[in-house]
Length: 173
Image (cartoon, helix red, strand yellow):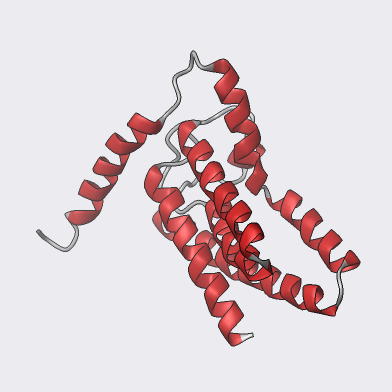
């Protein structure tokens, strides 16, 4: 296989797999639920949570929050750089997603990267938190694919970027 032939083949396979996960237009109730789940990864919500945890937490939690935010910023920077470089279009222009006006590229998913960071840092807070954040990460990733906001590869790579950035920041900082 030539050096450039693998990428289009990978994207074509990703489109086929994503089509199997996509939610049908007739599933209105499930679409509403998936829309709520997909927004659990919104940046403003996480900023609010980090701010509250920092303001109400002790010195240990405040240090963890600062690392967490640093990892999320690193992951967000990587996601943005890759999106600008590769410019993969989103599967559809899903309604109800305000970021689509500003963020037209889908690969990799910033929401999934943010939740990959959350899964790692949640586990550092304790096993119950780790399980909760990992479950939310998978729920958000599924919802964004099911609604047509992302392809499967977008969320898989986003989650991986988030996990790697979180582990790197935790180790270095």
